Amino acid sequence: MAGLTGRMSTIVKAKVSKVLDRAEDPAETLDYSYTKQLELLQNVKKGIADVVTSKKRLQMQETQMQQQVVKLDTQARQALAAGREDLARLALERKQGIQTELQSLDSQIAELEDQQQKLVDSEAAMRAKLEAFRTKKEVIKAQYSAAEAQVRISEAATGVGEQMADVGLAMQRALDKTENMKARAAAVGELETSGTFDDLTQLGSGKDDIDRQLEAIGAGGQVDDELAKLKAELGTGGAQTAIEAPAGAAAAGALGQGEPIEGESAEVEPEAEGEAPA
Amino acid sequence: MIVRIFSDGQYRIPAEAQARLHELDVETVNAIDAGDETAFTTSYGSLVEHVHATGERLADDELVPSDLMLPPADITLEEAREEFTGEGLLPD
Image 1 (cartoon, rainbow over the protein chains, first blue to last red):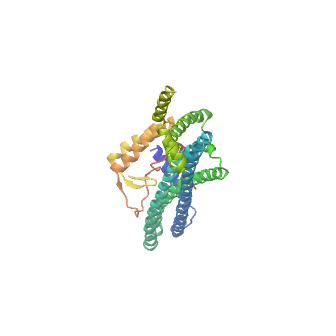
Image 2: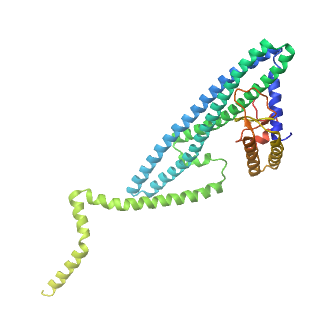
Image 3: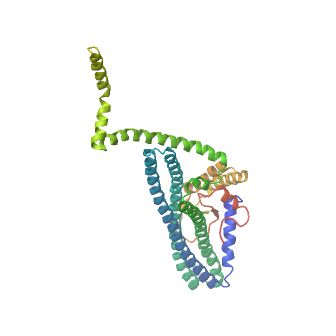
């Protein structure tokens, strides 16, 4: 079969036999293969630790960004209360940027979680194969003549070699992903410290300026919506604080503003009446 | 026939299920040649599914060489293409 499966098989078999050819006699092949498996298991453990570390780093970054979102939200409210709409807009724009970044961080963490699980599973499978191999190795050494042993060894070693290739690929893929994310996390970290969160959108995968402009329209709409919402909230909230704050004066003012319509009309009338007698 | 799916395990596939396996493999390669991501995901997904559905999973401690090997189920078109060029997916 010359399809994808056949191609994969050919490559794996070539790699496995390349490894096995390094040993000269059957017993050496077995021991060499066993040592290689132990080494690989150690590497897998390191690989898992590496993935876990990366995941933790991303999770920490996620927490920081969540705090940043809360802070920017507060800043936007403060800015608007202070009548600085431009500043409020800037804060909300930054918040929008961070929220976009948070979403992608979420999926990256999930991806690392997935990689971690794959490595753990693959380590368990490798360990089981290694144990079977260890037993078989002793049986082969003790029971078979050199010619028979060669066949059995080749079988056992190929079986376990495949597993090693399997684990090797899982490791490679996990580490590639981890490396990518490390680089990205570092880039985000730098932006965070330099405070240029507006540039976060540029971290996305090769967006051109039209994409960005389109995004800006969408983000602008969302910012406008939020701005309107904040205004509405602060609109009612503002009146309440005006009543409560400077107890005497403001309260009197507020009451005075509630009554005037009646009061004014009441005042106008007496004056009109008063004018008449005069 | 023993089939290994990387990052998954080994399966014993009965003779009557092998023709379909071959068909799906050919479809997958055609999709790779065409660079058709959707067709690739569909055909390779079906191939993996076919192995799961018709095969009997071997225990982890069985030491048997495989007749055929499949890349991990979540392989991308890009990675699959690498399998046909240069050194392939596997690290040295």
